[in-house]
Image (cartoon, helix red, strand yellow):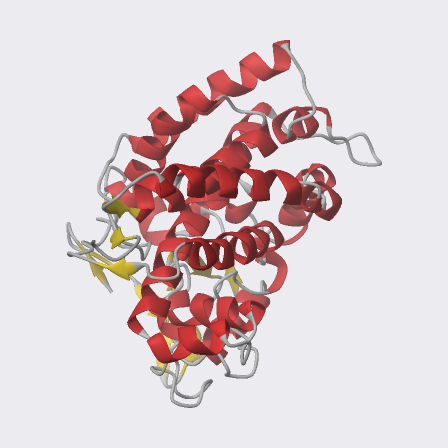
Length: 367
């Protein structure tokens, strides 16, 4: 695949090879220092994509290093903590729907619902202030665009200030829990690791769920036969959400895996030290993995998709994302049974994500 600026990399876009690569850390590793071309000066270090890779979060670590860091974060981000959010998610959902209910016309679903729900949930989980929401949205959008060379530095500076403020006034939020988290041997996250993993949780905590709410609504409204199955109880919301995740994953691809040696895949040799894009989106439509993959079918046996990754790096926030979707989507269609799409939904300008920049909807028929 070629990025603007003459940056060419490999991409894994089929299900089985991608799963194998994600599971085999003896051949495919994480961490920008493993990119031979970058370290040898063959890749421009100021290229926006190369620049955005300079992270030290658990997403960019492999093996024992990843296990250590993920364990410290997971000690704070427990399933019990996520499940305890259910009443609050329901409360925020109803509050947003009430606000939308006051509108007599067209609303931007993304601005009114898809964005505020997950950003408020992850902010309360982390212990962030509401006045930081728009700043976080802007920084995340810039970071994921793959075109802004200053985005990472600005994001890290902002998150560092959040952590410093939290350190002075600890609370019961996830950032405070990560500050205090210790392994059995006394190990804890370094300041850099705290900053980078906090940013990772912010990005993963609202950007992906925001995209999936918008994508799922659009899918169901453009496939009325499938929505009818839900409304008549012939299909479950749990299964519908998994098919939405497969069919229109909010994460199209992520950078990068790096080869530790020359490796041959389907007759093509990828040299040692090359960068390999992780193609979740195309792999979820792989005809070798799914029957009729380009057909949206919520009765499909629960798809074994890659929307949340695979292997040791399976998304830590998958349970939270599923919980938010399971609350947000049925509630929206119950409150507004006549909701329809209107206008255009331009794509968000990013090569890595898949969701609309805006999604206008008409909540009820015009008088």
